[in-house]
Image 1: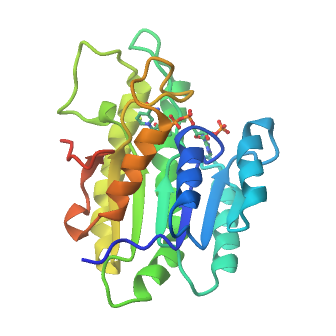
Image 2 (image 1 turned 45 degrees about the vertical axis):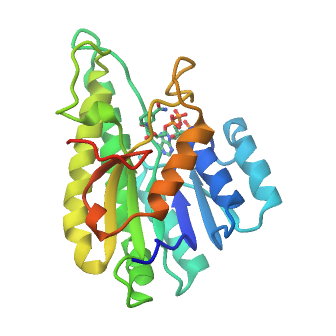
Amino acid sequence: MQALPMRSVLVTGANRGLGLELVRQLEEAERPPRYLFAGCRDPESPRALDLRNLAKRFSNIKVLKLDVDDYGNIQECADQIGKILENNGLNLLINNAGVYFGGDLSEVTPETMMKSYRTNAVGPMMVTKALLPALQRAAQLSDELKKAAVINMSSSLGSMELFDNKNEIPLAYRISKAALNMVTKCLANELKPHGILCISLHPGWVKTEMGGEKAPLSKEESVRGILKVLSMLSDKDNGSFLDWRGQRLPW
Ligand SMILES: NC(=O)c1ccc[n+]([C@@H]2O[C@H](COP(=O)([O-])OP(=O)(O)OC[C@H]3O[C@@H](n4cnc5c(N)ncnc54)[C@H](OP(=O)(O)O)[C@@H]3O)[C@@H](O)[C@H]2O)c1
């Protein structure tokens, strides 16, 4: 099975953390993507300075405003990508943007529940919907079935089978990632006839603003693993839940 081509890639939440590291390592690859779209909700803010500096050095990196909570903006961003790609199609969509709200039942609020659900589950689905024509185009460009993929950055905390009551219980986060896992299953089923794979991916517990200082994994190590897993994806992985080492996780 031919490896998934990474000629055109969109990473959401690309201004910091794992998203920025994904852009960095994709750019450092032996064959960097021709089009590397870096979605970021506020490209002009100080939080996007590192991404802007990276994009100044490499003309294939296009920084685009993409707030996954804003459906109008998602469509504008998809239109911009479509214009830049023309007939080339989008090979890889990495739905990486995410939010984390901690807290158990005594602390959870409707606002933290809804915000988590909107950003972590609804956002990835709507971004995929808006980019479907570009993903389909990439999948149609060749006889090979496996030419385009959607990667949903999930978490082992969203797994029901791995539920461990000794762990911290970030209710809103866990529930939103469990919902995202169902998004993966549904999209894997619906997009399969189009030759588009969809998987959930757990990046490990990683030192980022979200993961915190105690996390055992560096961004560099996690992303190296993720990109290796992505390069080896095949049809049999469609609709599965993998971690950064390529190990299957239970739902
Ligand atoms: N770190 C871990 O240990 C870990 C473990 C399991 C899963 N994950 C998952 O991996 C992904 C990346 O995590 P991370 O550790 O890199 O988190 P992070 O350091 O907190 O970065 C989160 C990124 O998402 C962006 N974002 C948040 N809401 C957004 C929105 N509405 N629209 C667009 N972008 C938005 C942030 O942008 P702003 O700068 O604008 O806020 C930021 O770029 C997340 O989905 C997370 O759930 C992380």
